[in-house]
Amino acid sequence: MADVPNRVCIIGAGSSGITAAKALKEKDIPFDCYEAGEQVGGNWVYENKNGMSSAYKSLFINTSRERMQYSDFPMPDHYPVFPHHTHIAEYFNNYVEHFNVRPHIRFNTKVMAAEPLENGGWEITLDDGSQHRYRALMVANGHHWDIRWPEPPFEGTLMDQSSTATITRYPIPTRGSMFWSWGLVIRLWTSPSKLRASQQ
Ligand SMILES: Cc1cc2nc3c(=O)[nH]c(=O)nc-3n(C[C@H](O)[C@H](O)[C@H](O)COP(=O)(O)OP(=O)(O)OC[C@H]3O[C@@H](n4cnc5c(N)ncnc54)[C@H](O)[C@@H]3O)c2cc1C
Image 1 (cartoon, rainbow, N blue to C red):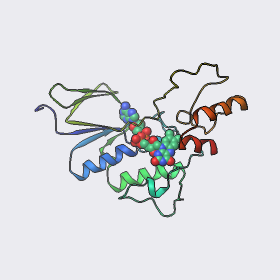
Image 2: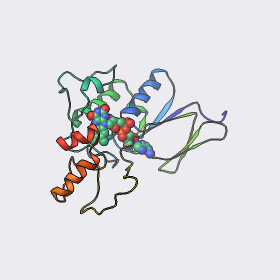
Image 3: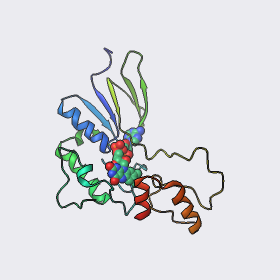
Image 4: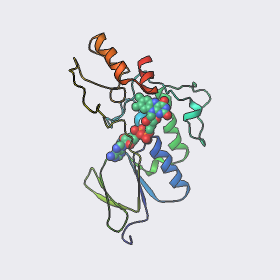
C-alpha cells in the first residue's frame, strides 16, 4: 500500500458522516469527506439540493431529542422534546461548526465509484472524473433515497403511483381515492416512521 496516501475517505455528510469526520479529526487522522449536496444534514435538509431527502414539510422526529442527540453535543434546551426537521438540520449545522469539521467537507461533490485496490486501499472516482486514493473508506451515504419496492411486486394496479413515506416528501399520498389511500396505510405503514407519517 506504499503508493496509497495515509488518508481516509468519507462518503456523505449526513448525521453519520459528520460524526465520523469529527472522530477522525479528534484522532488527527487525515481525511476528506465528500458530500453530494450543498449542506450537511442529509435526510434532515428539507428540499435538499442533493435530491435524496425524504423530509416532508410537517416532519418532527419520533425519537426524543435526548435519544437522538450526540452525547457530546446536546440539543439546545429551547428545542421541543420532539423537534421539527428545521431544528434537526440546524443542530447538525451547529455540530460541524462547533467541532470545526466543515473545512474538511467537499460539498456539491458526488462519489461515483469506490473500487478496492489490489494491494489494499480504495480508489474513489468523483463526478468531475478525478480519481483519488485512500487507505480507508467510510460509507455514510444513507439509504432512504434507495427505493425498495415490494418484492414480489404488487399484483394489482394503482390509480396513481405506489409510494412509501421514505420516498415521498408528503406524509400521506396526495392523490387517489380514499380507498386507495387506506390500502397503502394497511399494506405499508408498519414502522414507527410510517405510523408517524400517517399521523402528521
Ligand atoms: C421520514 C423519515 C423520518 C425519520 N425520522 C427519524 C427520527 O425521528 N429519529 C431518528 O433517529 N432517525 C430518523 N430517521 C432516520 C434517518 O435516516 C436518520 O435520522 C439519519 O438521517 C441517517 O443519517 P445518515 O447520515 O446515515 O444518512 P442521510 O441523512 O441520508 O445522509 C447521507 C448523506 O450522504 C450523501 N451522499 C449520498 N450518496 C453520496 C455520494 N455518492 N457521494 C457523496 N455524497 C453522497 C447525501 O447527500 C447525504 O447528505 C428518519 C428517516 C426518514 C426518511
